[in-house]
Image: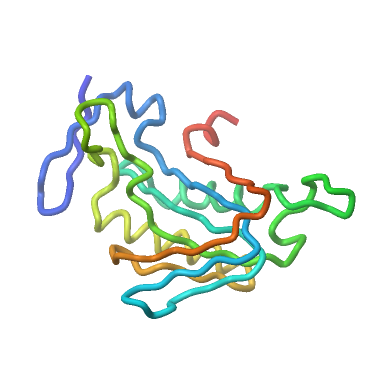
Length: 177
């Protein structure tokens, strides 16, 4: 059964109910543990961090503030940093880590048909920007240093992945637990 959502400027967007149920349109975060990361727009440095997490955040039409809050709680409590014995026992707050958050609609790439990916499952720019800013606001309540990219801009992101250690979180998985 189709679910009709609205996109920017009243453009209709069609989701299959099964896609929504299976988490194919829910908030996604690609999280990379880094020793450093930075973002530039038009050659100008607009944000940089030391040890912490680079979060690429994707928002769908189904997402809301409650979803963002749940995702923030999960990410900030995730024990993905190594302790003195080399075990992943420490959270971002345990290490006084920093965050760099980048909006990333391409996390919704659908490549099943043709050679050009479709991003129809990504949230409208208006909704995505609102939830992106809300997500950052929630992180700033808990983390001493939060940097961000420029929503919708062509950005150059640099990072040194620590591990490498990369995890894909999605709100569908969070709602199961």
